[in-house]
Structure formats: C-alpha cells, structure tokens
Image 1 (cartoon, rainbow, N blue to C red):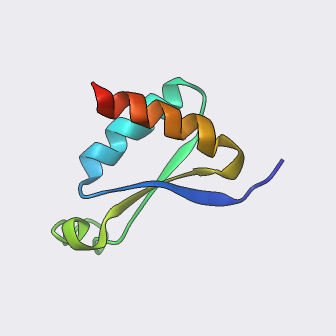
Image 2 (cartoon, rainbow, N blue to C red):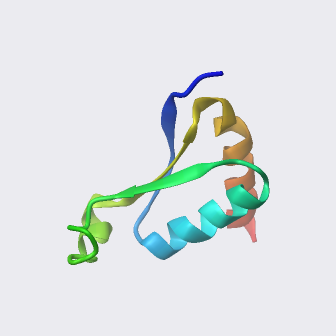
Length: 73
C-alpha cells in the first residue's frame, strides 16, 4: 500500500475543505487538510494561498468521484 499523499482539490476556505473531508471520512477515505494561514491568525491567506484537501494516492479516483457528486448538488 502506497503512503504517497496527493492533492485532491484546493479550496478558497477551510469550511469548504472541512465539508468535503467530512464526506470522504463518512465513506472511509482518510483525508487531510493543509493550509498556511499563520496558525489561524491570518485566515485571509486562505483566499490567496488556498486550502488543500489531500488523500492517499490509492484513494484519489474514488475521492474525486465523491467530491464531483458533492459539487453537482
């Protein structure tokens, strides 16, 4: 099993990324959020630097399908 972590999607807010991660978690896919907002002290950085939702490489295809279904709603 690969431990390689890849980018699933980049969001402009942590809330959107958390919502997507919750969906993935409910489907048994572990997802991680990476952001650089000075430890929460500069949340406006999320708009320019983005909030990255990351998954394991072997989960990428299924996670992409789930996120696409979320965005279709």
